Length: 478
Image (cartoon, rainbow, N blue to C red; front, top):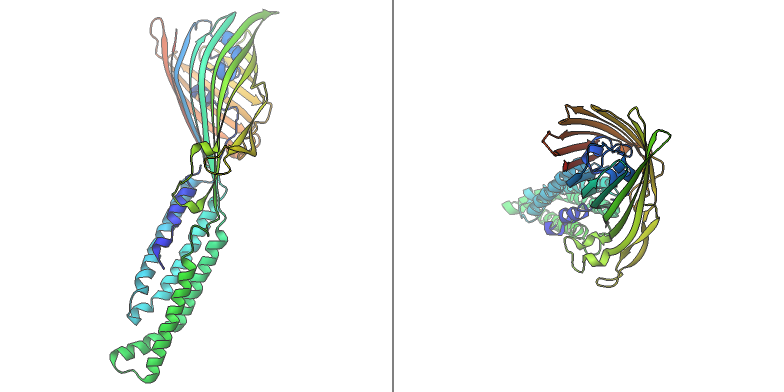
């Protein structure tokens, strides 16, 4: 058995470099809203108005005249397959397999019958280790690992009657799955090695004794016959095991790696108008925006090992440019309460994922689409000088990009303002369709008082057993 033909470690590394994807939920990477459970539709914050509700530009604190936010950076990692725990187990199983193969290889080269008789047990260990690796890979099959990254900059000019904000933002998600189709192959491999070990075990007992007698010069004609028969049987067993173990990774591996990625870049101008009707302050807003989308989808054969020959990003890339807009409304009450509703991506759009039929060819649609549909969310908040409480609810289900499940969020969060220079935040986001995506969040804001302007730094962290998120923002209010 040749250890070099066991490419499980390298193949597995490639399989698990995949990371699934890619819902387009009403998600936030702004640290204030992330810390408050992703609530923000009715929170009077001009720095997040382009992301949540453009109407908030005329429903914010009237003392805020200008807002510059740069950078706003956020990241999320979603690991429902618990790879954080399972990958070290797989790595340990692969290391144990490599060790057992090395030991069996060393023993198989020996001419000492007393050493050869150790081989059946060592081959049984190899068979057991193959089974452990097979089980580890099976547990990771079709388990997603998704990463998201967002970045943005905002220049806002809020006002009582009219408000404006220019923003540019980018959101990227990368994910994928291991489609493990080799469980039967490795199971048969383990069985073949185990059968060869059993055959060896039946011959090494009497054969070893006969060969020892021959080596010592005390062997009879029967010992010579038994020794030769044992040697032939051992050789046949090794040939059987060799043929079973040295399968070709170019033809025997059927597993696939499905990679999918989306990059959405937006540039837009939010405009809001505030007015009073029956002593109630209303605000309406709109955000026209230009969108650029890069869609990546690749289904790769794992039998390439670590080779990427013939693979280029353009073989799996589709690019689009488009226009869309968001709408929002907010109503403020004299007692500090505010309600809001927003519709993001009013124009429904569908974009095809594409792949090249052969390396270098023009990519063609594969039947999977990224669907951008209107997302409707409503919210309510209460604000005063020392606290903010907010609740948001998705009124629509958020469509996936193809490999993820649908989502529909309810968000609850609060903020305590300590003397105007520090803010403590906490929140909870519940997915009404999948409780595994429920997330708890906390955050901190620092905003010291300086004459003529007020800068602030905000941090947030969101977590559950399968998901982690973090966000950072630096900004200045005039």
